[in-house]
Image (tube, rainbow, N blue to C red):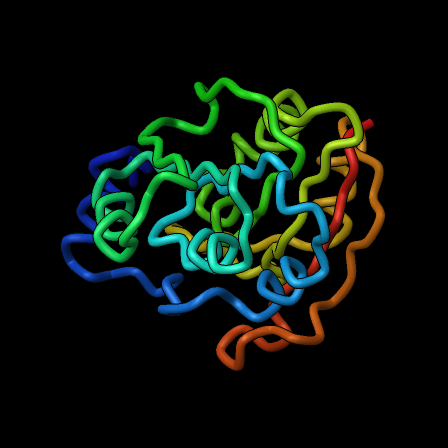
Length: 194
């Protein structure tokens, strides 16, 4: 049995076994960020890895971005890439232990790394971390393959069921602007806290 703890993710980074890392902000997230107007939003990116999405937010003038990862290496990689870290907060912590309040949580390949037993807890924790009318947005994998290691798939029906006690669904549909390697395998979603 795989234990998906800090050591597991650190080793994946050391071994350069990071298939989720595109080397840039994913197109769906980038286009979503482009639609945001308020650059003062308090934003959390959990399980962020090298977080090219955070770099993109900074480039557009967002000033209150927190990047959270259980592993230290990706946070160090991000810090090394940035010349100025004053507009970003890098936090090594377990998402489920994290405390704070945010206007927006951006989901990019974190949920698919969670064991199935944590899936409902993910939506519950995200809701706890969000301010009134806070949003959870991003991409979720849309495939049902049986896998013994991340990334784990899922489908729209499952996500609707898991999120509905905590969120109202604004949008959850097939992603039409996925990266080529992810075409037909992603749903883009926007949820608002109940």
